[in-house]
Amino acid sequence: MREMYWIREQGVDVHIFSLLSPKSSLIHDQFKELLLCTHYGPFISWDVLKAQFHFLRRTPGRYLKALGRAIWQTYREPRVLLGILAIFPKSVYFARQMQEAEIEHIHAHFVWLGGIAAGVASDLIDITFSIQPHAFGLFGRNQRDVRCELENASQVVTISNYHRAYIDNLCPRIEQDQIQVVYSGLEIDRFQPLSNPPDDGPVRILSVGRLLEKKGYEYLIDACALLAKRGVAFQCQIAGDGYLKDTLQARINQHGLQDEVVLLGSLAQKQVLKLYQNSDIFALACVIARDGDRDGIPGVLIEAMACQVPVVTTPVAGIPDLVQHGENGLFVEERNVPGLADALQRLILDENLRRQMGEQARQTIVEGFQIQHNVAKLAAIFRKVSKQEKTSLDGTIAQ
Image (tube, rainbow, N blue to C red; front, side, top):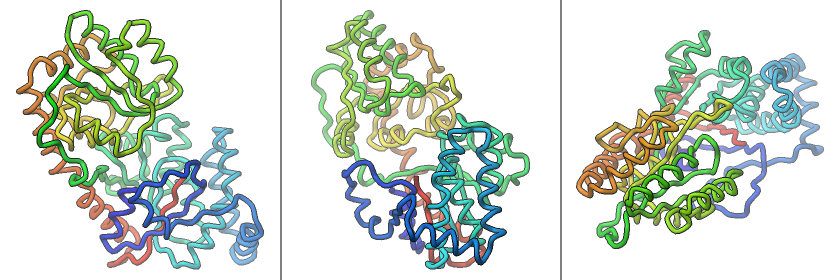
């Protein structure tokens, strides 16, 4: 949302083509302006059928090529293939809308359905398209299918040097200059530290994220149990929801940590911002999950550091692009519970170290992760790929 909002300031006229309709009525204030350029559509309707007839009649070869390529990129994963067959007619419908709107380039996040839909539209109306892989899809899907999807793109934009090296190794047919790193960013003016943070009570540890295996919350809870056994005073809050909620609460109860560790559930963005500003340490014990899934550069780390909070995390995937051990945070090897407890204890007991690392953390975000600067690089990539000095219209396929 932030990326699409700010890229318009670079002279890019954004149109969003959403494969799925929203499940929630909650709309972020910043997105309300983008709703005016967002396109939704049914899975099947007379207009969707007319779009199929349009391309079958005028360019049947392209239509069959697009369908065949979509199947080729997913046939090794039956569930993904079913998803592609379900959204293919809508992808064709969006391609027709893009054609009428004279869209010049398509950009899709994630190596997933949106990326394949972008390829379908590109095949049908003969324009360039780019894919921006994150963690989801890139690491957990069938790697041959991932390779096919990425090699079909005109340009790959990714979020860390780790991702770039991974893609370069996976896809030897892609030239190195076709893989560009553009960091995720945020508006640092909206994520400010408090001028007078509260200093009463025990040190406050915060973690934010979906309650999934790759977030490593079981290890954070176990580390908190070690801190409690050592007699270290702290308060740990975990904001987020997910399928591990009951399992993690049971783990908290098993350790007798009900007073020290609290699961807050899902919270609005404004509430999370207040949590950052009132926290002393941010912890995220990321791991590579058993199915290969892992984080890229978690946005919550960027947000916490912008609020001048030192972080304790793991050197998984792209996180070393953001965190420098001993400068703006501390690294612990994944699944290392004693090491995680030691790092947290070190910061809990050393207020000066927390302050120094917090200040350096915010400086890191100011220098390299301001979204206004990063989207300028992305806009330049769009213009270069579409071989135009000025991009007048950009299509974004979102899931």
